[in-house]
Image (cartoon, rainbow, N blue to C red; front, side, top):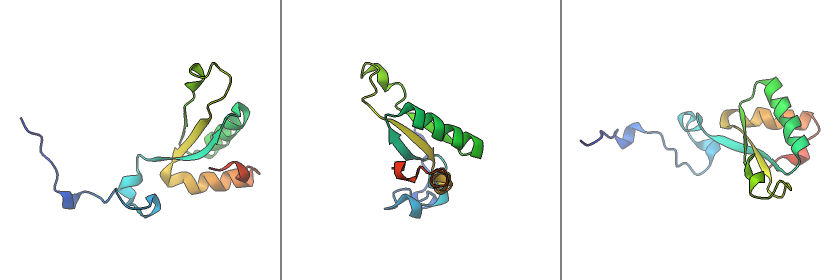
Length: 102
């Protein structure tokens, strides 16, 4: 049994050169890196700022410490919803953390 494929003309251009130029339908499930750090306190603080502001986020690579022996050699990435990245960046700048942005 073959699966039906939508017409290519019905699909958004999700291969746009820059995400900011991609159609909104492409950005619905995309997350962008806000910060990358080995500093667990910084990650935790920024996460609390984002939670309080209601900005969707995800900590990537949080379990990588298993591979590096829990010495913190591999940085964690704090990802935010693509449509909220500008708000998240502004929030970080307001908190005096603009220098930590990816």
